[in-house]
Length: 91
Image (cartoon, rainbow, N blue to C red):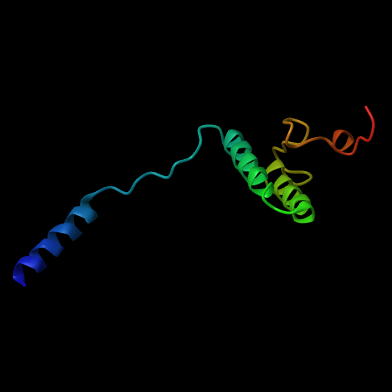
């Protein structure tokens, strides 16, 4: 029993002494948002037509930015089209 307690205490000391890993943040926050958007849009493809359309719009609002956001992606990348491009019917 004493050996098990010593082993447990040694393990606890080892974990306490180890520094916590630093959170991983992308070097460019916009690149991180774009990657997250693309991942979310890919996940939407598994849904049926109606649910997929809602999923895509929710992902765009979350990652492209709401109106008046400080750094919107609307019109800057293909996944976040401008309104004129998104709703265009003809060529």
